[in-house]
Length: 430
Image (cartoon, rainbow, N blue to C red; front, side, top):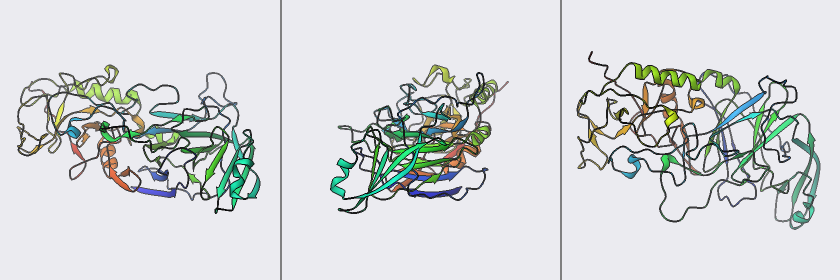
């Protein structure tokens, strides 16, 4: 694992977000080295309220739009989603949980979705610094009365602030990310709960800012993308306590919004990832091998993602996550004296969680198109060995100060010595 530039986000806009975003760069294995970041005090983009990501002005009918990259919400279930059995501390039978494994549980709708492609806009909407003003801090609100003028204010002290006015930049496109559903936000992201856990009592206050961050993309090759903390609000203003910094996004960069984590994939990086057709072909190939339950001798099969995640299918493969032995669902082997969710594998006698296997459906989270041979523990999401080992060794943000390896498909914290397990299937007896 290689880490790129780490830039703390000093401000999160004028939302009621108690935490501040942290921007972390990470390069996926096999990609080029990270270039040196360009730091600029004043190069912050603006927005003209457009949220439609359409093709560029030079694209002819029938041609693909120029893509800057894609943002993918790392696998956390929506607040209020259904708990996994592992989190409830019990195994009572087949049950599903809703998560961002390729799609929001409520469906991808408009600007609120699990992934978003950033394409070159028909017309540039970026802005660039124009005029700087030094002003007394108490007079900021009066100085920022022009809603049509993009500006950023820096509070340097109780009595001294700096206001930077911006003008249109025809060389950049700007995309804004945040919790707000206002028109200037291109990608609406809400708080996520690892593994779909349900919090008891009243819903906690959101930790994602209404105007969390913004991405500035050059409209000309090599289409460099840079990320900045905080975004312009409805009054075209940004308020920061200190000067902001920029970060050049690389393939695999992680963006921590203090409540959700986004993954940035470049077009070149996505070419190395499997396609949805390849994932479906792998599912069909795995089912064509006719794996069997070694005890019940029933044929197992991964269900089609088209039918959704209502509950495990009767032919659903289940796995003992400590040893990797794959079975069909059964109700024996409980060892509640060892824990409410502990079961004993009938083949090797190891005791541990027993969960259904689900194929990872978010192709952008995969490092290669390898066969689905490994599962994350304890959630049971299946992917290639390279993908499983990579994410198992990658600590993801938890809160504002902690990091923990988690399943990229559902966000469940990984357990065990390696965080993943090699799956052991039994072939048909004939």
